[in-house]
Length: 99
Image 1 (cartoon, rainbow, N blue to C red):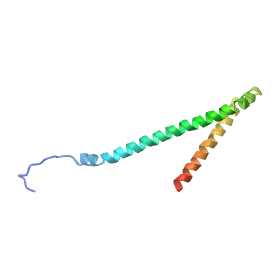
Image 2 (image 1 turned 30 degrees about the horizontal axis):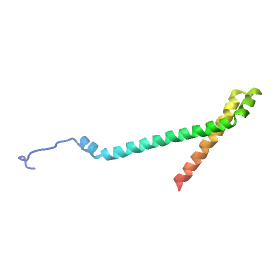
Image 3 (image 1 turned 90 degrees about the horizontal axis):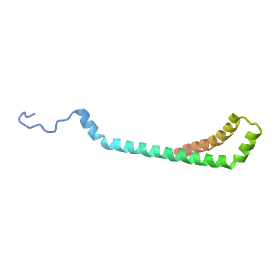
């Protein structure tokens, strides 16, 4: 090249690549943020449904405990019911993904 030309805007290759990927990083960050927000909302919804189901069965749970059912058995009953909702959501999500 011509040695009499002025050199302007000298950057390293790493800086040039980093500058060209700013938009992609922003989109990835936004996608991550929305994914975490969706996870938070799903968790809150699942908690609400499970709390409502347990409240509906409060008498049954109280009777089981009064009759001597072990705490582990009562907890397993509640968690089993909650896991059915989780599995139903996973199945629905996978089914929606494949369509």
